[in-house]
Image (cartoon, rainbow, N blue to C red; front, side, top):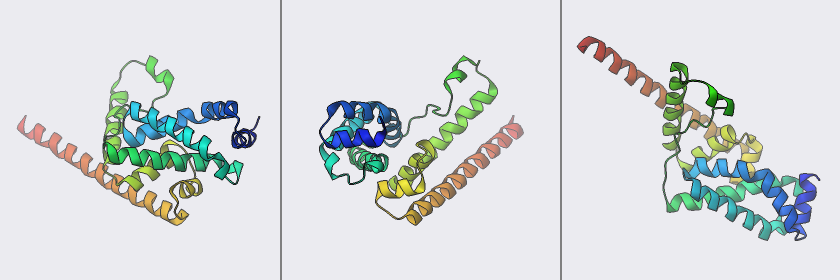
Length: 192
């Protein structure tokens, strides 16, 4: 059964269809909420609240084919609400690693990747909430600029602008951090 058919069944009150949609979107929703809040438990609450709201508001969705942006719009609003309540930091785990990387021995290259990921996450945390949201939706959830604009209730140009500004801030911050590390290393060599 297609996603559109499932959404139409949800609109007619079918709880089984909601369960199927839940299975399709729960992992994406958890990952997204986790990146915004930094809390696994809060993320689970957010996703659960989002699916309840989707079920209760399903009839307000005019085009069943637009479920994904609609879902993420609701999820974003709920995540922002929770973020305002409890300010958390982004997790420092390396979410970019593939499952089969776990079998590889710790190496210098892996250590460097982890350090770079930690630095990136720390800098993403310093972005304002709307820039952080756009970065997470675009890079971590793979949504298009058009979908993000629908989710955030703004123009595509605004999304592009926020992405551009966020990338620029991240690049400057990461370069500054790298220069500081190089300077510290040189000082250690001179003093050592």
